[in-house]
Structures are given as structure tokens and as C-alpha cells.
Image: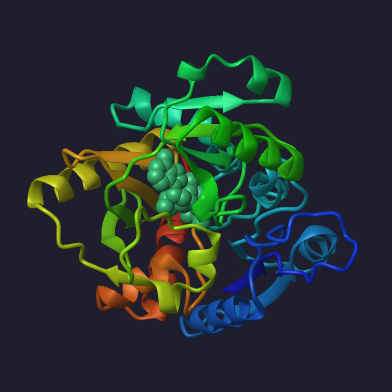
Amino acid sequence: MKIGLSYDLKEKIAPGQSVPEDAFEEYDSPETVAGLTAAIEAQGHSVVRLGGGREFLVNILHESVDFVFNIAEGRGTYRSREAQVPSVLEMLNIPYSGADPQCLAICLDKPLTKKLVALAGVATPKEQVITDIKQLKALKPDALPLPAFIKPIHEGSSMGVRLGSRVETPAQAAEVAARLLEHYRQPVMAEEFIAGDEVTVGLVGNPPQVLGIMRILPKQKMPYFAYSLEVKRDWENLVEYECPARLDARILDKISDSSFKAFEVLGCRDFARVDFRLGADGTPYFLEINPLAGLNPKSSDLVIMARKMGWTYEALISTILDAALARYQRANQSSHRL
Ligand SMILES: Nc1ncnc2c1ncn2[C@@H]1O[C@H](COP(=O)(O)OP(=O)(O)OP(=O)(O)O)[C@@H](O)[C@H]1O
Ligand SMILES: [Mg+2]
């Protein structure tokens, strides 16, 4: 098959550009594009690099590809940015890998995502959404679930998330929230801080199978741990990845069950990564889901997890690709939904 690859590459922030220093954190590196190209070609396909944004629009109209492997994060800071490329592909009736626009748009909205997974019976931390400084000032002190973790509501790749995002007092919460409101120009959420283990779950296939459950442990003892931007950028020195996670079978079952429920209620497809923190009693609290989980051959959590579970990068990519292709085959043969 002739497979198009849609992606957005990280850009250098020009001096004087008024964007946060992590503005392009979600975008991909040339290493990811090269890795995916090689992995897809190893399956006997040819790959056309479509890029993202306007370049993607031009290329998709001129290249007649049979299918698109999509990792494009979308342009701008819009909360539905990840839905941009899949929407164009649906308009042109070109099949593609991964979740559809509706799922991608929902999952970039953390409070909305949490409402849906809660309806499916999954535990999530309490939260208070703060839309502007006025509302923040008017909040009653007991409206905040302290200690809290403050983060922008429409970001990924830990944009706006630092170790200092954990706050203990209303005054600290106000300070961090005000800074985020100003820099990220979107509402923020103050979420109950869940102090237990950090766990991420990889799901592949339709219906999904658990690829792995990975615990992320700080290498050094610290008063509290957050898998924040500083930590993700220096992951080789700061964290240990334990996969399979050495947790109680009862807790592992609960984590798998909550992951399946989240994948299903949100309408994910082909692959996803779900982040949890464990409560004191072992309850997995859902933080967020990544229907477009990173696929960097070296540093992405899903890939690290796959490697630890004995999968090669090629096997992971071909499993995602095959799951997507099989969806279209089923849909063509019957009245199955994609
Ligand atoms: N309520 C919370 N309690 C404890 N830690 C939290 C909480 N919310 C976020 N964190 C910490 O911050 C990290 C990043 O938060 P989250 O997963 O919501 O952000 P993200 O930017 O969407 O992440 P990703 O890089 O996976 O896309 C979490 O992995 C966790 O370590
Ligand atoms: Mg996360």
C-alpha cells in the first residue's frame, strides 16, 4: 500500500516569540518520522511524508495515498487541534489510523473527559475548573481540593505541568493558577493531588488488549513525585520504568478494567495510553487518556513499555497499523461502524 504519514515537527522558538517555552512540546522530532517510516516500510508498504498544517493540505490533495498513518497533533492552541487532520481525511474519505475527530477533540479537554469516564464507573480525582482570575478570587477556600495539582485543561506532554504544580494552600493555588491562566490562555484545573504510584497503561487493538502496565518511579527519594515536564525531558536520569508493574493482582485488574472502560466510553481506536495515580487504598484514579500517544522510537512511554514487554518498535507500529486496516476491512464487509 501507499501509506501517507501525517505529523507536526517541533519548531525552534524564535527569540522574542511570545509563547510558553514548552509551546511545541507535543510536536514530533525527525527521529520519530524516520522511525515510523522505517517501521511501516518494513511491512512492505511505501511511505509518503505528508507533514502537517498547510503542507499536509497540499500533499494530501496531490498524493494519492491508500491510507494515512496519523500522528499529527494539529496546529494552534485550539482544544480540538488533534481533530484537524482526521477531519480532513474523513472529508476526503481517506482511511487513517487512530481515533476519530470526536474522540480526539474530547480527550484534549480534561474535565470533559473525566466526566465521561466517571459516568462509565471509573474513579477520577476531584477537581475545580478555574476560567479566569476573577473567578479564582471569588472562590471559597474550601472549593479547592487541597493539596491540589494545577494544570491547563487542554494540554498534553506535560505542557504547563511542573513539580511546582502541586500546591498546599489557597494562596499557592492562586499564584500557580494565575501564572498558567496568563501563559496558556485557557482555563486551568485544580485537581486533588493523588499521592500514590504513577501508572501508565498501553492499549492496542479493537477491542483493545493491554500491552503493558508500567509504573513510573522517581530514581531519587523526594517528598512527592510528579511526572512533570522537567522529569519527562530528563527521563533517563530521573525515573525508572517498571513494566510489568509489580503491583497487587487486584490493583492490576482494577487498572486494566478502568483502562478498558475509558477507551470504550471515549471511542478510542487502535491504540491509546491511559495515565493513573493510585490512591492510598490502591484505587486507580484516572488522570487522562492519550488517544494519540507518542510513538518516538526511543523516548515515548508506549514504546518504552512495548520494549519492556518484549516487543520491537516494528511490532508495535505494525500492530497499530493492522488494527486500523482491519477496522476498515470489517466496515467494508458489513454495516460495522469504523
Ligand atoms: N491530580 C493529580 N495528582 C497527582 N499527580 C498529578 C495529578 N495530575 C497530574 N499529575 C502529574 O502530572 C503528570 C502530567 O499530568 P497529565 O497526565 O494530566 O498531563 P499531560 O500533559 O496530558 O501528560 P502527557 O505527557 O501524558 O500527555 C501526571 O503524569 C502526574 O505525574
Ligand atoms: Mg499524561
